[in-house]
Image 1 (cartoon, helix red, strand yellow):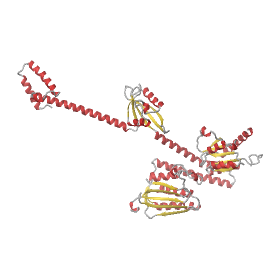
Image 2 (cartoon, one colour):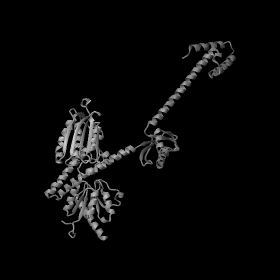
Image 3 (cartoon, rainbow over the protein chains, first blue to last red):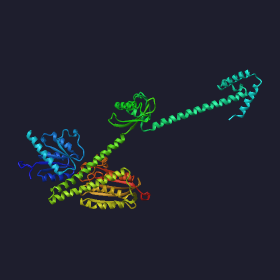
Image 4 (cartoon, rainbow over the protein chains, first blue to last red):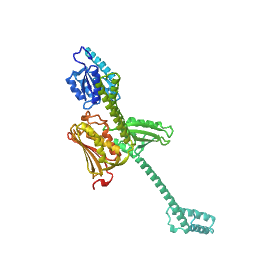
Length: 138
Length: 434
């Protein structure tokens, strides 16, 4: 099942989490919905994947070794090559981020862990739509 | 009680006066009194006085001396009491200040002195010398002033924070009470920095624990929802996701167990069953239990027990947990094909039995060594190798140090493996080579 049959390639989501079980569960749900999924286990590894693959949306955990989700989102926002790539963040902190922590990141949405795979998929789709309409408007 | 000699003297004196006229007696009486007074003031040599007068003077002198002595004693008692009170005040860990009705500092104890000198002593009459935050000092003075017509038992409270030059923050609770009708007040400052720090550590632990609990819950919840919604109709997919959920449920259970064990020990409510334990035998049991896991990862797991009688007194299940966690960590984190060696031996110097777990794995980066026993601390380079609770080593430390009064530690060089060890006191000297 293709997300958008007019596209030459499948819509690609980069899933980043240091917990490989979570990566496997999320990737399973997204692949079943027709997305291409690239996996990474910390921010630095995700950054490498971003540079060698065309990514449409980044779904990242917040607390990770080496480079955390906020650091990754900040790098993405600061780099023109990734302009308009939305970042959805999963957090197990149980409380909201401060606005300062958000500043300078491309984070468009935060989702709490434990999460509903169905809601996660809905939010990924919604943010992809918003991202593409933003890109078209630009 | 009358002195018989004095009475006889007085009678003789009175007898001598019979021959004189009443006026002469009166004159003599006045003269006598003056003489007595002068004698009492040491102006007259006692030897020049009639014997009876001399006795009288002597008696008066004794009485005056006694009174003087009593006065000195009273003063000394009062002085001792004042010294004791001031020492008591100085012994208090709280800073105590007395303010007059204008808010000037009249007195302060040693703790208040120490605070004033910590901030850099200024005018000792000003409250802001001890409370170097103008808003806080002003609030305390306002509260003191407000106590003017209040019930004498009334207490006003406030709290404030002092930021020291180096950025250190110190917190205080202040209580203000009136001590007399002249409007004087006593201000007691209690430092709460440590309590705040304990509360901060506790809240950080709760936040971290909630994070750790949410992680396994995520996989379990996600799997259940996908199962419910028919995403897992493919038997292979279903088996894969259910295996994840089941592993995460085990992890959740271990996490909760570790958290409870640690908090019981830390709160001092753990009830260890203390018995004689052969640590060599216990290590053998634990190693045997982990052999299969080691085999699966192609690890050589060896046990060396040095002699018999490595007896300690301790809680069997708890010590098995310590050995199990140390060996289990090695089995989880050491790369396949490496070697793990468990050694149990007596240590003469400390009269203890020491268990050492040495591996030929990756070693631990020096920056991680000091924190490796901390709650939820994980060595970053190992993080993805295995799913631990992040509490295993903290639990080991608690069991060894708090419950068994032993020692635990680690030595490692990056790239050269690690050596975790713990020692608990040996039960009797005979188990330790003389």
